[in-house]
Image (cartoon, rainbow, N blue to C red):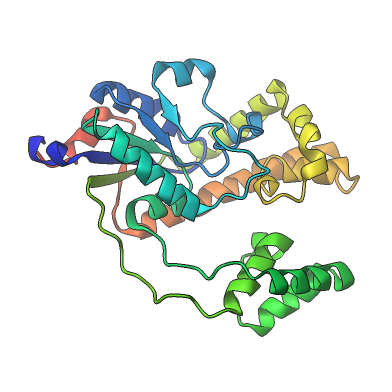
Length: 296
């Protein structure tokens, strides 16, 4: 493995929520005596803790983590910001570590970090004001009709999120400022893995995690954020369901049931994404197995 490590190696440990990424990444990081970069688009927000399963204080002290509680939900943040910041950090980390571990379940952030993103057109203030006026006057259904008229493929989740709808329409109605790019070339080696478990076991782990979150005070945490429920960062499983409960739309029982259901569905989508990438190797939580996949 010497030749690869001389260049600097990023080991990506991905997988669905509740699969056990954090504890395994810590084992791998301890093996290499290195640090961990989180690639979770919600754990980076300091206002979110219980609902995003932020690593415990003991875990954070065992191995140094980056991009945990590092930003605010009141800041605008996206995969492009992450790409820039994480690669700037990697340049510094590779000066003192031959290997760095990245872990999380946000596929877009991983892709941005290691491959780069196709450029998007800049925000158009006038168009955004026009679309917000349409939203205020005619409701989200008007935005959905606008998206359909542009032949946009919108997921069910995004179709109910006005901010994401507006951005999708905004992008579709503008000409890209540059042509699409190929994958960027990074000056480090990357090896990508994803963890998986038996479906029933994974779902049990998800249900148990949600129960633990409730015991730890998820409802109280969500209540402190309720006033900001329209922020993009809070369109997140575990919070948005409680907002429905706080608004009187759901019973508490339905809210909890929906958190578990939506988390299971999210895990299923994550697994599908990682399986379809082509460059992610499925492994169990064995450091030895992971090392066997890294060429010597």
